Image (cartoon, rainbow, N blue to C red; front, side, top):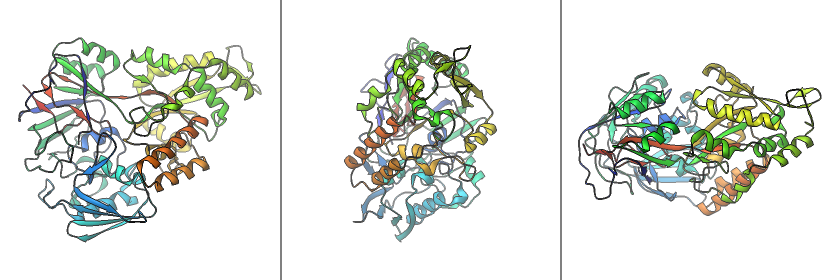
Amino acid sequence: MTLLAACSSGGDGGTAAGSTPKEGGTLRLAIEKEPECLDPHQSPTGAARLLARPLVDSLVHQDAKGAFQPWLASRWTVSADRLTYTFELRDDVRFTDGTAFDAAAVVANLEHVADPATKSLLASSLISAYDSSRAVGPHTVAVKLKKPDSGFLGALALPNLGIEAPATLKGSPASLCQKIIGTGPFRSDTGLVAQKGIDYTRNADYAWAPKGAAHEGKAYLDGIQVKVVPDNASRFGALSSSQVDAVTALSPTSLRQLRSTEGFELHKAQFPGINYSYWPNTESGPLADVRVRKALRAGIDWQQIVKRVYFGEYDAATGALSSRTPGYDAALAPSYKHDPAAAAALLDEAGWQTRDAEGYRTKDGKRLKVRHLWSDPSVSNLAVQIQAAAKELGVETVEENVDGGTFVKRLLAGDYELIDTSFSAPGPDVLRVLFGKDNIPTPERGISNNMARYDNPEVERQFEAAQRAENQKEQFEIYGDVQRRITEDAAVLPVYSPLSTLAARSAVRGTAFNADGSADLYGIWLAS
């Protein structure tokens, strides 16, 4: 499970090397967001991945270097045409409901993800090449793909393709949103309780951690109590008063305060995947003009804004992918430098040459105006800073903070010029998820991840080539070309590289992070 040891700062050095883990105790954890659905087959959210991972294991494990290791599958082979993956499964694994894990369970899970009735918002797109699967023996399963897919094993390693008990998959999607049963190191008998959280109990029989995990066997903790506390100040207050042992996603201000508070430590890792970014609507409106998109990228000093708003806690983004992502192309960083003169020239070239009385650029009597659609109040300070910088450039940014229902309706209709999000994933194949034309959200398709509404035939050919890549080196080279093309098209305006943080009492030991950047709860133990 563990890919990256936690980088710690502050506190009294409670995670010092040489500490001997001990069993027992319950970790009290406060998180910032409640997933709308616990089932990772359905939900695309980071919150769902965090809360599902203690419950579900995966067929394969992805290590810190991006290589794949055995987990529930003890080994696998790939056919010469790379259309059939044959997995040999462990024969000593049981779900926490007592049923045996076998080939039929794997088939049931893959079919569940691929079934349109599941309404998967991410998992199904991760295995879009999936065709069928069948049990060829009690613990052998053959998975057939429609076309080669170099990202297939990476998808299987994510919690979104975690293995759930087949009997529970027969229930309604709504029931799975509340409770899932897996083979993981913990179980939850009560499941996710809306506006409250979820409680876990240790799976005493757990003995199948993946190769490369921090330890083998059952979890150290007796249990975990997770509370949902959306307000940052309340989460920080609960931690500093020892009402909880650990919290996720504190604001940069609170992180700074924590560093100087004795008895606490900050554990952090940069999320892999897509940086927190502004996504321009490349399909319609003024940002359909690549020159205007490039002008926004060059004309706003994103690096200084990030430094000012986040006190240096976050690194400014230098590409679509975060620098921790395998396959990140550092050579593209200069393309994201601040160059107001170049931005002004681009806007002049695009015809926005005159200014009105308020200093905004105009063309044919119309002001250069873009609407920024968002529904998360946590980005308000950043949005104000970007709005002010855009005004200096001559672009009016209208902040439209809407409710969730309105947000979804307008997202599907493409009724916006800018929208913002990040997306964690342990490899460059996430570019296909965020920029592939098949993932443009529409009323017919539903919510999907290509919010830039980007459709470039050349990039689509590169995506196909990346899926056909025979090894990781070839895949990374192709995705390097994709990053260059996306940069040339200014299809995304990267802002900062998000951090996965776990602020905790110094007695919380064994902290680390999973491949997708989420905190690994399996290896944690309590010194007191």
